Image (cartoon, rainbow, N blue to C red; front, side, top):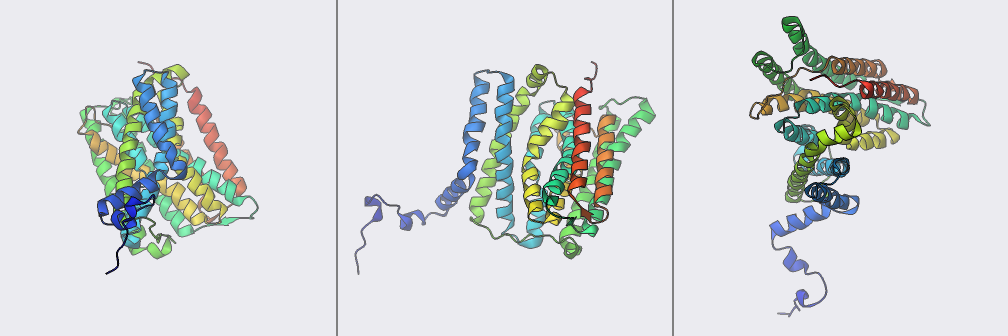
Length: 388
């Protein structure tokens, strides 16, 4: 029998001991995956925001640092979800990826709703829908179309996505029309409107889960979905990273929500503009970069899935789920939105329908979508705050 010198007495790693504990391996893998490279910025940003809040520093600075921390956290959650989805096969992995694709927005929505900030949550929901359709898809078409005559994508997938967006428009319009026709105004509370919102949310959730079956099971060959990523870390490490990133996102969202009123007053903005433009842009930062990179590589099908698919997830999954979860909080959230928010969503869906119905786009159509988004953003910036 040969004698082996224990490597731990030398200034070298000890792989034979490191590999004996699976929990230790998953923890090390999760740490390396979560905080390697640019993701190392998560720690100083999140805990820096916490430190600034404890010291009661300028709320704008606290808000900005917490918001900056949410951007890499959203990217990390997306990567961890993709890693975990790689262990479940194409169908189950695709469903998992779709269900958790907007978990950052969901976490912020839960924290803000339970803190009594339902109006900012609803503004961020409509802002995410508008931002993904106009800003993300517009940037992708503009960046991908430079140097190319046109960009092509599945006309069938575009049509299916637009029909789901039409359902979202119906869900946004009907509660407001109900309030106007019955009460002549738009109060966002009341037992009747809360029950109506809850039933509407249930229908939206059922439709969303049916769309997952449609896209990932019965008609997956028509969507050209690319769900075959080979995982780079273990399943335990991916799950650990996802849980840890979600916990940090909850902390960052709590800090953000605690400062949003003070920051809004200090900047002279309205809660509607803060939620619809600023917070929604922070939550969609990952989609921005992903869609642009995919479009530059002439993968417009996937860029369309990122942009339009994310809007569908927000409208048909995140928003109704927040309505359901808010029933257990202090103040239930309704689906009654500001009339101008509804108009902006309808215009956004119509603009994307005109651009994508033929299965082709180019850089000038991307520029047009961006122009529509900027017009809406300026409009909401100058929209006066609602009276008491």
